[in-house]
Image (cartoon, rainbow, N blue to C red; front, side):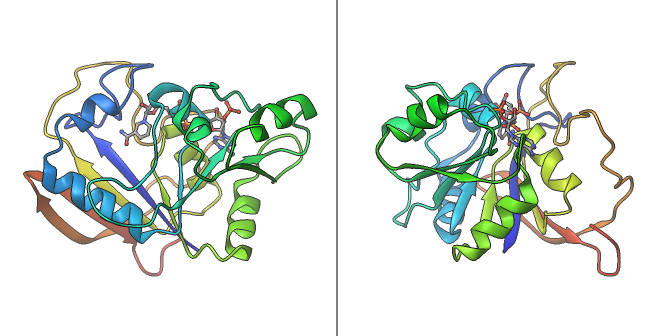
Length: 222
Ligand SMILES: NC(=O)c1ccc[n+]([C@@H]2O[C@H](COP(=O)([O-])OP(=O)(O)OC[C@H]3O[C@@H](n4cnc5c(N)ncnc54)[C@H](OP(=O)(O)O)[C@@H]3O)[C@@H](O)[C@H]2O)c1
């Protein structure tokens, strides 16, 4: 399965305009052309993933709009199942697959699966094992996974060596926030990938926004 991350970054390298804020503020700088391209990318992937932190902060829909296309399967890793009941991904009736640890309590499982379209996939004992998630999704026929963040999930995917391609949308504003998350926020545990080399394989200007696409430099570890 090919895993591609898609992120918006400000000029000063931030994922949002401040700690705890929604990244949706950055969407306001998108024009119609970038929106259509981005939603076309969603339609071109079999599955789409964000971390539970992004669900809580942004309440994303993770569906294909602005172009005609098939919705990718929504996959959300969560260790504790703390997903607000009013979240779009729980309430719109479309398929959502939560990757959860085996220890997730029955009451939490029941609360999540009471929503139409929701199913669970056990991956890992006490915390979600992202390698196991990738293995199980591949076994279900998912050939391409689009990951839209946030930083904590991205950190976990890079730490597990699971990222094949990086897409960065360069939003031409300065966040100015000293506490905003960066692409790979520094969480406990080293990534073990200092100076890992990536090459730009494509670069485009889409509706005035620069989009760069990276893949690992051949012959170097990811
Ligand atoms: N600019 C952008 O491109 C962009 C994109 C997306 C989000 N964002 C912003 O990023 C912020 C949210 O990011 P975040 O870092 O706080 O949260 P996140 O990465 O979206 O989600 C982290 C959560 O994912 C779950 N998880 C389960 N297994 C995991 C694993 N093995 N590794 C990592 N996470 C795992 C955990 O959920 P539980 O806590 O439920 O156990 C964890 O707390 C928001 O402000 C959002 O607006 C920006």
